[in-house]
Image (tube, rainbow, N blue to C red; front, side):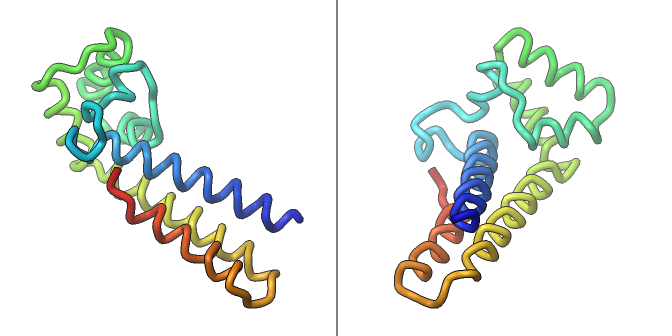
Length: 132
């Protein structure tokens, strides 16, 4: 069924976006790993891409050096974290996750109401609300 494939794809993208956001906004206690691990591993995620599109050259250089050096000092992380909020990159990435969740739910509308459909309809809300 194409509808289930679309649902799965949209849910997967939403899950990954939320995971990327948690890496930037969560806590080591909740995540079980340091915040900013993706940057430390040289990974550029959507919130960082959005920041790079909006930020000044100095911020871009700071992000690129963190990714290149795979080093994220407390000071460097503080600056990047502030810039992510200042440039609304976190909000925008979350809004995109919400869009994917809504599209995933929409894909299920081809199925008649059932307990199974309702269970699948509830999963996207969990993905958006997860904190670890």
